Image 1 (cartoon, rainbow, N blue to C red):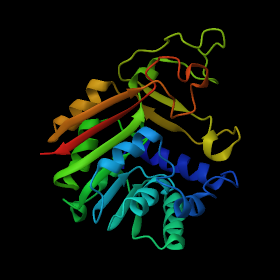
Image 2 (cartoon, rainbow, N blue to C red):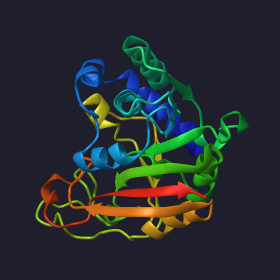
Image 3 (spheres, rainbow, N blue to C red):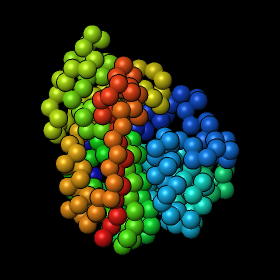
Image 4 (tube, rainbow, N blue to C red):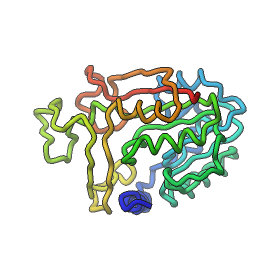
Length: 265
């Protein structure tokens, strides 16, 4: 396992161990009672058009499992398999699947190391906000993903828009409240490290173990997909923020999020 991935595993598991009491507490109730909970309206509409009935669905970087549980239940899928590096989050997700009685299995794994036991298993793959940034090489990442997809399988990615790579967020040295729209960083790939914790899970600031992530351009994302046999079938860009990092410019015309659809040849 690469050093940065091993470090991220420790940092994510630390964040989960320090999670806020409310984090993930609503999963069971919302999956039971709501229509495609934990997805934005645009993503819901895309997923409702995908043939998920009786399908086997995979999610890579599934976090606490809530999105996969939502899609398997609401989409009448036969099975769901989610992968994430944090072992304690995976145990949490499996507990929720058991409580819901859903045919979902969550697996603790470094995505790069997923073996051939999942080869051509999935009819549908989803990747959601905050997944792509944890990998330094998207061609390698998508090679693993497409290996796990059946011929003709569909992939749907709902992610932060690469444009946001250029913006500073609150807490960063270059952030200034009077210049929220200024571009401070290169659009192209660069590496980030930080010890500021994972606030959305913990709801507190703390000196954390080191997180390492990578920014990727739109061309890098699409080349990673296309070079591994995925045909891009749709791209939608939105001016609303999925990450929670850009509230000041949410819905003001800046490209902040996107949905990419593809199909394995």
